[in-house]
Image (cartoon, rainbow, N blue to C red):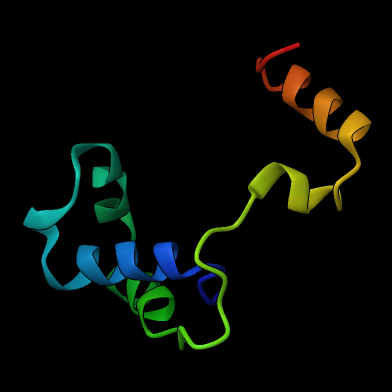
Length: 77
């Protein structure tokens, strides 16, 4: 599975090549296999967005659906 953003690709590359430099909140990446880290880290960054708006991109900008999903996940109402 390729990375979906430049930030994700960069975090995976750090986890693969220099795990001690990871932020504490990203230490969970170290539980991934070396092969999976390689798949994400080797993604070409040229056409990737810097960041991905996860919730809104999943529902194609439909705010009503986004609110329902957030509410079901325990987010803001």
